[in-house]
Image 1 (cartoon, helix red, strand yellow):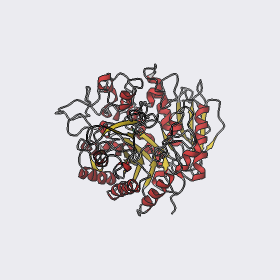
Image 2 (cartoon, protein in one colour; image 1 turned 90 degrees about the vertical axis):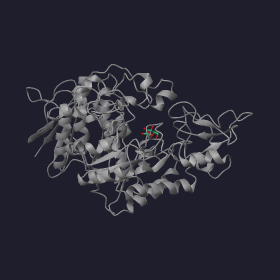
Image 3 (cartoon, helix red, strand yellow; image 1 turned 60 degrees about the horizontal axis):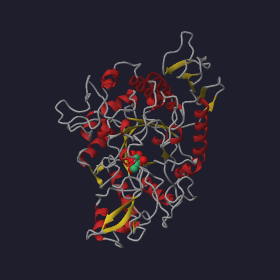
Image 4 (cartoon, helix red, strand yellow; image 1 turned 120 degrees about the vertical axis):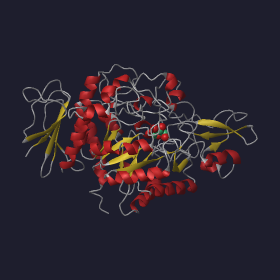
Length: 545
Ligand code: GLC
């Protein structure tokens, strides 16, 4: 089928982190009622689709990425009926819905895992997971030395049904997230059915969590983490692609084809692109771009590499700067070192907020002008920064606990949104709320509420609204070709060719630069100089004919 005009190729997609978007029932935790009350915000922003982080039944050991029932909404968020209504309401506004599917692991409270614990070693229920006897005289050592991605060992010992120490099970993340055994056909069938369940309820796509981790080396051999073998024992194994070929058939079996979006963190660009071959996923998050420093040559290189690896597989690129796992980019862009890697979070490094804001505004125009789709993380449209001073006793991310605080974790980008008013909870919760927001909001957010910014077209929110609205009217933006234009050192300048071509310039040099020849200035991320030049850390869209 011809997917060339498919919505996911050009969409602006807004990520909702449900526990921090809006609290409708006053318990301090965001919920679906809160989302439904604020759909007007998404419509005013002009986004094409919304991706929801997990809203399923979950003990919330990893903020919902520990799912105990993939077909139920967690009562803290609402009910399945509410989710169905929400999907319809969003559709009525022209907004598509992407749900999050978490196939690598489930919750330790999932009925499958509970049954596996009850039935003991050798049972069919245990084969849905990775249960193994321990090493050592009494099995007191884990089956191997694999480390959890959240820190600490990737194995936890169980008790036998009679209470004696028993087998160990594998968890690449927290102990509450046992890894599923994707060699077992029952696991595959289950997730195929879960996909259909959400597609049947109107989900227009799914975001696939930890998409490259599903298959494991059955020998569970130890390896040197600093120098992993090829193939890796649990990352990006070739067999994982069979899973996505079947998922693609399911997505394509709907008359209005559904989109598969991968969370694939891989250093090798070609291995990454392989997930987007024509019979696999449609798109994947561009983490190489997310981690890139705010530096012209580095950005140009990563943009070129992105386009080069996507072209052969025919997949659209994605442009993303923030999500619920990484420090907010206003903060990153205000630091001396603007790059990011998963294990280098630079908590507490000095950050210049004004600089971070200026660069973030320019980055928005860059992203929206690049070929492909764009992901926005809730709150970036308000210029929210990473909250770095959350007291340890209020932190909730298992990453913080499993590293004994060495890694601050991800709570700082998950602080509840400020909507209105001059004091916490800033309209996040209703006036008669019984609890305060699950993470404390900084007092400075009085200046960053939707209410405070909405009236000002030059505010961060005003810029997001204007840029997204304008992008819709410019036919050459979104998916399609681009050409670099000659520009002074430190300046990114490219054309989106077509009947009505557009040029985007971003100045990352040391001083103001002249605008490229143009017929009209469409939008700037900040004021031009008195001489009409483009200042440092500023971007412009130009109509050139
Ligand atoms: C993904 C999610 C992250 C979660 C992890 C385990 O990386 O984005 O938030 O903790 O998977 O499910």
